[in-house]
Amino acid sequence: MLQDDSLKKRLSALYALIDWQKNGTMLREHALSPFAKEVALGVCRRHLQLLFAIKKSVHRKPSLEVSTILEMGIFQIFFMEIPDRAAVDSSAELARRASLGEGSVKLVNAVLRNLLRNGLPPMPTQNVQRISIENSMPEWMVRRLLDFYGSDYAEEFSKETVNRPSQWIRVNVQKISAENLKSRLMLAGRIYADRFIEIIEGNQEPRLNELLKSEEFRRGFFSVQNPAAFEVTKLLRVQNGMSIWDACAAPGGKSALLAESFPKSSILATDASAERLRPMQDLTNRLNLSNVTVQTLDATHHDFCENFDRILLDVPCSNLGVLSRRPEVKYRLTPEDLKELPKLQFEILNAAASALKKGGVLVYATCSPDRAETDKVIAKFLERHPEFEREGEPIRIEKNEFGLDRFFAAALTKK
Image 1 (tube, rainbow, N blue to C red):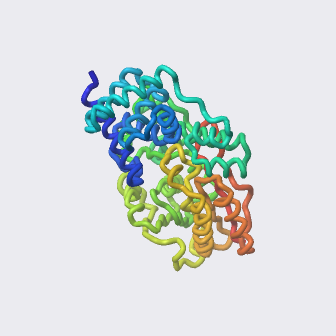
Image 2: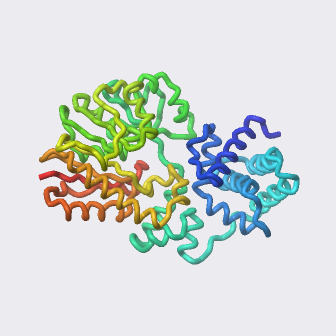
Image 3: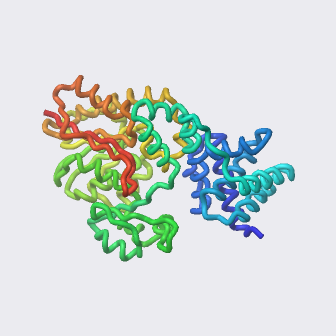
């Protein structure tokens, strides 16, 4: 018999998924248990593949509610370590508890049992369709990847988006070393750059949500952050005593990283959205970072005049480099977005650059590898601003053994 607690977790995942499909609500906005979160995000990552399996298994398209329950059941059977019987029985019971009628209960039961016997349906042979369905990437995205980067890259990039992303915490090295914190929290993951610790979900060590309830977290010993942020901020070549403007700062991870690393620097962390800045109270409250000032400010409308030694622009972007973390983006993004976003990115870069002192360094960064948002924006800027020049080669974080987010970052110097 299915435990009521287990059913409640599945119900919460079901309602979150339906809310996402009906209203576009991000899954992380729902308070989900670790199990419910894994199911909801996993279904979202593999949404097109799961719908394809359902389409091949029914004669008539089921309702959104039934379809979502089937997606959850298929995901549990083929992509989670859930006993087959539990996956089937829980899915049928979900349909019953959601008052979808006995016909729907029987349909869910029959479709899942049939897939258990016969396996998932074979993929289409046409390459674009196959990559699209197998990795739940919209076809226009697959074509763009194939046209710009070739077949191998398109396949590799698409596969990454359906996998659970790596989890890391950033150690506040002003308070404790990574080795000491790792021992204190009884963690088994790798250490990166002496300040990041990998969280290995699914083994015997504490899960991330448990760590966030710990005394060490409350005292500001660590925060959640991917090490890609460290590789980006290194390009700034910050020294203590410098003035830094993090112009698109929310939710504040890079500002905190800089403040912890350079406690005698002065950091202005701004964002155009007051709502997005709210989590940054964490900088002054939990982390006790006195060298950060948080302010609501649109980087395209400022009155700074060569105020800062360093400027960091982690601009709004398509999030193509973090699709495994934000899988909803795959289905929301449009080709038009990749025409409009570079315009905004250039506008921010063009406006913010006037606040950089002569001899200063500005780093332009995106969590997208797309050339329209990266190289082309930089080239357009340099063409219009001969007083700036590239400093070295941009960093392009691609597939890597540490599971670092895909990032692009370029350093520009004001002559």
